[in-house]
Length: 262
Ligand code: PGA
Image (cartoon, rainbow, N blue to C red; front, side, top):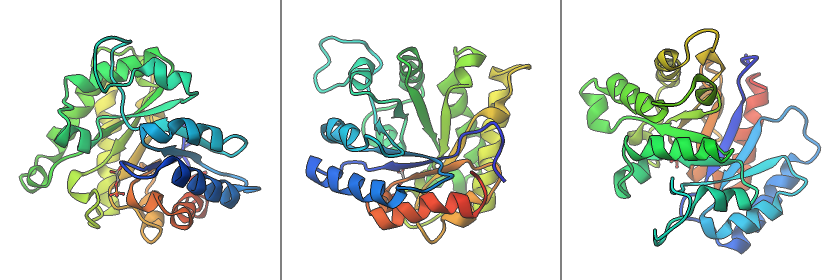
């Protein structure tokens, strides 16, 4: 069942894939697959920076929003290779991924930089989708809960409860990303709920962490989407590999209706 106050989101993280022409082709196929469909979740795509402008024009009139995979937290200046929040807003974007595990593993993203980016996103009117999740050896050493709690706490530290209310989380166990190993649906649901429980200390009453959407990501495919999305604490999916193929991504989008979460 859909939670009455949480957004259901199916997001495609394209990572370092798709030229502008390929982006346009994929978006066209998604738009025609969604044309005339009722009861859709929020459908988001996260192309690489070079295809953002093309993609945001290509989604015009379609029920699809475009977001960026990363950004810097500073406004402007001598930061070679970086992209500012204002540059994303200038493209008409509304969403940005923050703290994806590939950024954490390969590009120096930490629990110190994530909150700076989250705050900068919110200050610029962007919705951050904050990615958290444990490494395989952390899971094997029973450290999933403390690791995820620490990442969640760090990400929202210093935000007002109203600001925390505007973020979206994605639970992405690192060992499940791009590996074909999916987290068991019940376990994904347990951690998703744990994320909301952790938010409680940052959102005292009358604010309610039950209003914060938590997605699952890590080897989501058309074949396993229904099982994962059928878990009440999970409000959608952040999809990597399977979002690069229109048919498969469309099936994942439509499975939200099948399991009744929209
Ligand atoms: P995957 O990636 O679906 O290819 O495992 C998910 C992600 O990294 O967001």
